[in-house]
Length: 105
Image 1 (cartoon, rainbow, N blue to C red):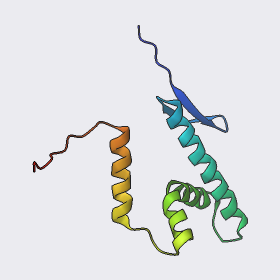
Image 2: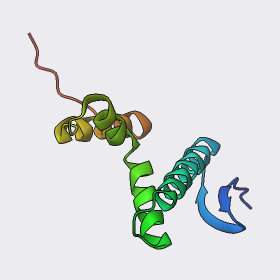
Image 3: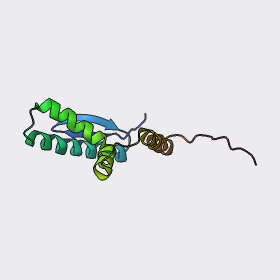
Image 4: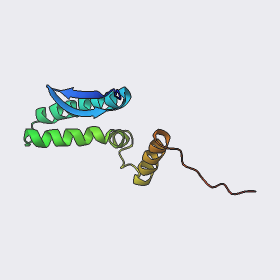
């Protein structure tokens, strides 16, 4: 018999996601906190949108936090190639190590 530890993110009594590590669960919980803050801010803005639209936009902004921060700092869109390279670097660090060919001198 195997024993598994699972970390469950619960919001308003509803299970949102299950993770194998506490770090991943905490990161997702933080993302949901940020999305909730964006949603509340959007609903208070007085713009014409329903709660579902505000929630969807709030979650999108939270997921794109780095891009939003870049735009606020520089007033320019982030370089999509740099964002893709950063995501690949992070996934390489988290996941399996890749073997790279090195040119001999």
